[in-house]
Amino acid sequence: MGECFKKQLRKRPTTGKTVESRYDGYGSLQSKEIIYQDKTGKVTESWRPSKIDINQLELSSKTVTTEIKGQLWETYNCIKEKDPVCGRLEVFDKSTKLRLRVEYGATVLKYDYEFDSNGNWTQKTELQQVKKFGKTYFEPNQIIAREINYY
Image (cartoon, rainbow, N blue to C red):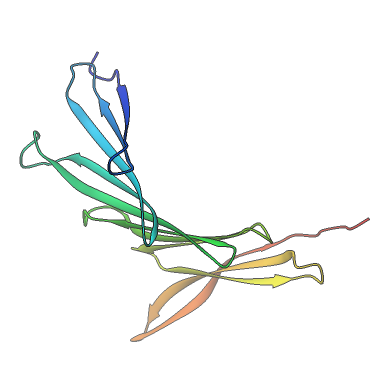
């Protein structure tokens, strides 16, 4: 019975915040998500019980989604240092439907794209940050090529 989750969703008209609470089968609060809009964009905060006091919640992560010139920028930052991926930047271009995702923390990645004459990517190169001999640089980790036929 301890794994049975119940969810409660409330919209607060005075603040414009949506609060989603999850409880276990015993009625103990397991997590809370707060979603709201501010000047930076749509913000989602994740709250989890504190390891020090289980009756207290602490902020564990925060995601901000912003639209800039037809692109959706989503940044994720963890608050707890033990999260293996402590940050993420995801960019989605609405016109080309291209999604770029970079995670940081333990691994730093970046992506290079080659495009055809119609603006579709034909090759994506994933580059991983490497430190050798006291120098930091990016080396290819994975290359994905795709062929697009137009009729």
